Amino acid sequence: MTHYEITHTIGVQHPYFDTANFRFDLLPTGNTAEILTKYRLLVKAQGNNLWVVIREADGRQTVPAGLDISFQLSPAFPDQYFVMGDGASVAAPYPTNLSIHRKGGVWAILTCPAAPEGDLPCSITVQLEPVCRFWEFLVFPKNTAENSQARFLVKEARDAIRFTEGEWVDVKGVNRKAWRVQTADALPLKQMYPFRVGLWEEVDGMERFCRHLTLPSPTSHSVLKRDTVSSYCYC
Image 1 (cartoon, rainbow, N blue to C red):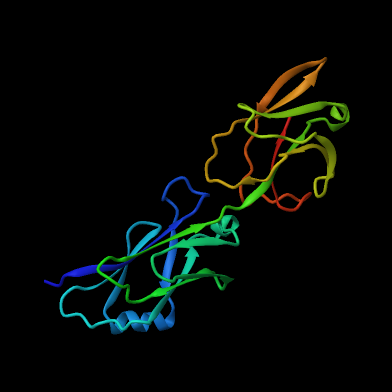
Image 2 (image 1 turned 135 degrees about the vertical axis):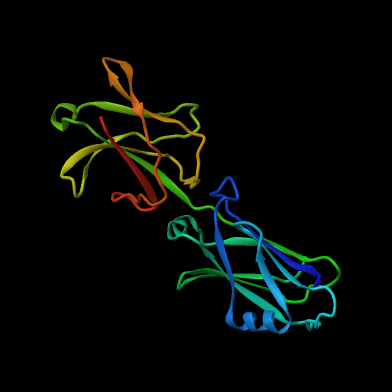
């Protein structure tokens, strides 16, 4: 029976996801594929964002020092590119390089030594940077003419988000006005949020609750402002 030992562990962490239920693809470059074959190294996925490189523990061919291997790192699904930032950090015991690529479906290229020193495997952790966007909420009154003087408020249930003063705007493509408000600060995009955002209308000096608002998705880009994701509702 052939016995194997782990030479590398490679993990990817992304602040967009609260769990490890996201999926990345880790593929060896052409030259690395030849090295893996020559020295009988195998790459095995251990879930959606963790991989190990293993080799035969007995009778193996020694991997020479100074030899590097490289892997292409890509999100498995196209929508994930909307939450991929322009930077990342790498924690590793040996010189390891991560270069942002963003070409041909490849997000980054990871390069590390093929032969780690000592008995312990080379443990590599790639920490991706979050993508931050402003949030925009558009409220389309059912009767714009009657509600053009209406005043709305958007609030988070625990006041965890600050919002700017709202304003009436013309929205291209729909030929009607909407009441617009956005967050005062850019917020990190997340797969799930702990926030509850609601819409109120001021009537005779009183605040009347209208509805809960759907939070913007990472792919819902605003047509009014850059670096902003949008959500809308009818009221």
